[in-house]
Image 1 (cartoon, rainbow, N blue to C red):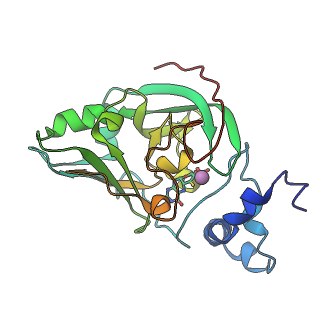
Image 2 (image 1 turned 135 degrees about the horizontal axis):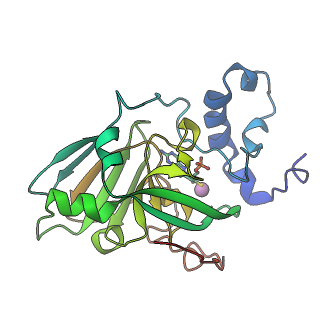
Length: 228
Ligand SMILES: Nc1nc2c(c(=O)[nH]1)N[C@H]1C(S)=C(S)[C@@H](COP(=O)(O)O)O[C@H]1N2
Ligand SMILES: [Mo]
C-alpha cells in the first residue's frame, strides 16, 4: 500500500496529522478507515492535504477577514473583495514539502505581502511578521526582509483557480522560496512584531529559515521558472 502511493518513511512521520485533517476533509468516509492510511492518500495533482486541526470553518466572501496589526501605524482589516481589487501577482514555481513530495510548476496568484505591509505602515522597531490562521492553531513567521520579498504573496488563487477550502482558501500565505510549511493556509492574521517567533512546525523542530534546498538538512534543488 505504501509503496503503491510512492511514500517513504518521511510520509509516515506526519501520518497522524494528515489523517486528522483528512477526516474533516472527507467527512464520514474517513471514519470507516481504522488503518490510519486514509491520510496518506494523495489529494489530487500531487498535493497532499495537511491540517494540524481536525476541522476548519469554511469562509467565503461574506465571512472572510484578514487583519493586519501589531507594530504598524495603520492597522487594517481586508475583506476578500478588498484583496481581489488590489494588484495581483502570479508566480509559477515548484511546490516543495519538507517531507519530500514536490508538485512542479504550480501557479499561485495574489497580493504581494509587501504591499499590505507598506499600506499598514510598518514601524521602525519592527523586525518580523507573525501569521495566524482561522483554523485557530497553525502559526508561521518571517523576518521583515523575507516578508518583503517580491515572491511572497497573500494568495487568492492556486493553479489559476480560487483556492479551495482544502488548500487553505479563500486566502493562504505563499512563500515561494521556502518549504511549503511556511505557506500558512486559512490565513486570518498578519501581525508585525519585534522578533521572530517560531511557528507551529518550527516549535517541533523544522527550521525557521526554511529556504528550499538550504535548510532542514535537505538537498532539494528547485527548478525555478517564475513569472513575478
Ligand atoms: N493552517 C495550516 N497551514 C498549513 C499547514 C497546516 O497544517 N495548517 N500545513 C503546512 C504544510 S506542512 C504543507 S506541506 C502545506 C500543505 O498544503 P496543502 O494542504 O494545500 O497541500 O500547508 C502548510 N500550511
Ligand atoms: Mo509540509
